[in-house]
Image 1 (cartoon, rainbow, N blue to C red):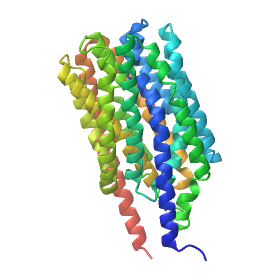
Image 2 (spheres, rainbow, N blue to C red; image 1 turned 90 degrees about the horizontal axis):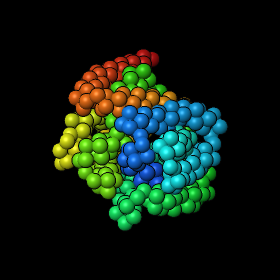
Image 3 (cartoon, one colour; image 1 turned 60 degrees about the vertical axis):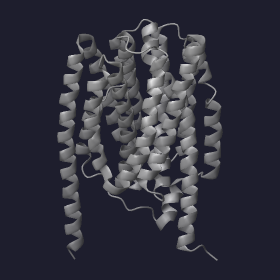
Image 4 (cartoon, rainbow, N blue to C red; image 1 turned 120 degrees about the vertical axis):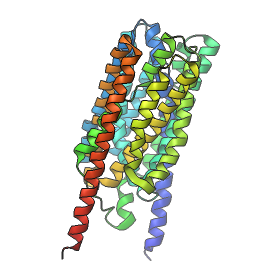
Amino acid sequence: MPDSPLDTSQRVRDISVHLILLLGVASLCGSLVSNGARSVTGPYILLLGGSAAVVGLIAGFGEFVGYALRFVAGSYVGQGRHYWKVAMAGYGLLVAIPLLAFAGRWEVAAFLIIFERIGKAIRTPARDTILSHATAAVGRGWGFGVHKALDQAGAVIGPLVMVAALVFTGGYTAGFLLLGIPLFGVAIVLLIARSAVPRPGRLEVQLNGRGEETADLPGIRPYATFIFLGMAGFAAFPLISYHFKAQAIISDAAIPLVYASAMAVSVVVALLIGRAFDRIGAHALLTIPVLSTAMVLFAFSLTPGMAVAGSLAWGAGIGIFETVLRASIAESTALERRGEVYGILSAVFGTAWFMGSAVMGVLYDVSLTHVVAYVIIVESAAVAAYLWMYRARIVVRFQEEIGDRIP
């Protein structure tokens, strides 16, 4: 006797929750490795002889590579449905992080940092497409919010590993080597997840027979413009941590602790914004320009308390942007184009972060006032782009309603 639609829906929901949690644990381990290293890349490059401009360039170019190459990876995933193979290959490049322990020059460290970002570019479209299928049964915002919260939990633990290494050894070598241990956890969890759900696309198909009926994003240009401007004014943490060390605001050992605190904030914010997205949709993105502006005013202060507050605002921004961006793409994009759209918008995201970080790194060497002015101008433009995007959504909905009424 075949399962009833109710039984099928419950079974798909149970499998989807299991898959989201498994991918969340894999991301937790991977984020522990990558964010443990990222929490100290600014002062580590300074220790190896790099300048503020070098830090900004490396951080920005690393993010650019980590997002721009997602267009290629997303197209490959969309065409061949090689979700698991691509995801595992990308996670494998995390091996670059423990190798930082042996970098004697900032140029070598820069290569390894960018190499790890390439791995991020390879794995993310595949992982997010798998998640998009699983979140159909549990709510887009909530599903991506839970995954992001687990991911950010790893981002909290990783910097704490670096704190312990700096406190007990006084150097970075032991910390980078310790960050290699969770790589085994990533491999084990991914193998379990692939064995449990070898064809994740079937989850969405089984949910209602054909998968969710979704329309393409209502004009990708205003959406992409908002993402570009919003991220162009969103500082990378390596530049913030460089500021902490260069201005002697807090100690070296406290810098990864501040980063861990920012990631802890992002865990809570990801869960809250995920629930909010399921109720208000992409309107949640409007908080990004506000947070970015507040962040630069506080994070680049010379007062320790204000600088830490700015770092926490940075963490909140990470939790909001990455949760809402991924959920809105899954909700608004047809199944057959989802991998491609993830790739396109991720490329825009990364290009903006690269350009913004590079510009802010150069401006920092001029004066902090120039950095603040730049962010205020860019984020004001992002608000205007949001209004353009909102108007485009209204037009699309109106056209759909008129179309439904015409016999």
